Image (cartoon, rainbow, N blue to C red; front, top):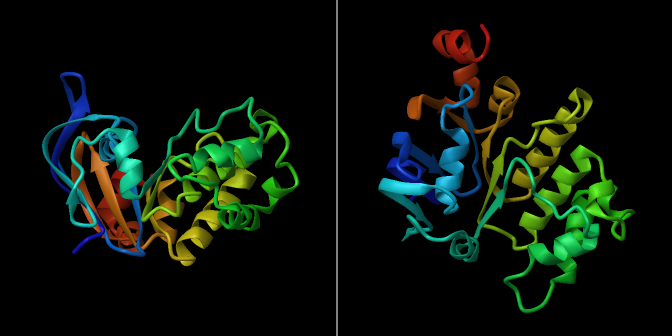
Length: 234
């Protein structure tokens, strides 16, 4: 049984349907990437999973439990971590305060888990008392991931983690995600940098116009002539 399974999903916002009959599967320990052109519905798929978009039809199951249409706070309690593309930290709060908020469902903040986040992202450790708004874009993205990791999620959803980063920081961001997955966290990522994300992942999906177009191992998608021509710039 898949850890996370999206089956025949129609979803969108209000009365607007963005996704039609979308299927996604993520197995325990996998690193899965969703790519496609702007407007393909990639981020909507993520938002539907975490309760930020409306599910019109189909189902979403996590660990065998139906989570279709649950509100975001309930999805978090199920064990799904989500890092949105923008507005993903509290800029006026310190790094440590942001991490503390990441652990809000817990009765006490697990200090060992916080130290594990600092070990994972050393650039944050020396700035734990500084406001998040003073961090660089890459450091803010690391902090957002750290906040999601405070709950030790069963799967980590990342929406465009390289967006807005300077080119020399993109590889570092992907390296961090590789390390998170290698340490045992399942990852589902939507990413604009299609070739690099597919090169690093286990499996990939290509969405276009709100529908599935291709699914295969990351390397196989990169090697596919049709995928390269239509979605990877040749």
